[in-house]
Length: 165
Ligand code: PNS
Image (cartoon, rainbow, N blue to C red):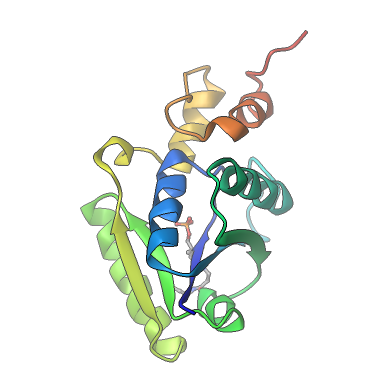
């Protein structure tokens, strides 16, 4: 069984993330999405909320070979705990690529040579990021093309753009 992990902050999970996840699930037998718990940073959503959102997206896409959980510490250890042979990361740009190259090297060094598998984002998702979604939504912009439909309302509400009766 070929298992992979897909770590990230996912605050919130975007259509870019869901595309990378769906494509990874075709390459691997099972993908564990890992929401990194960063105690120094408060996000738009709690880690538990992000995990629930990702599970909803997995369900909505009809994906049967993935799940989501939070993790504390190193991605390499998260991968080891799951017996994963690869870490999945999405790359949108040259600057992403440079960061990912460093992380892949460090993860291989501390993670017994674990591979990082890079999937290039689809052109329509090149500029989609969680931080852009948070900012656009905060100022009342339309995020419907950037987040999965099953979490759209939650993101709108959390940023004060929900339908208030
Ligand atoms: O969604 P993000 O913020 O781009 O994800 C970054 C993440 C969580 C993959 C990265 O920060 C990470 O792996 N953090 C865990 C700590 C770690 O393993 N550090 C060593 C690798 S450089």
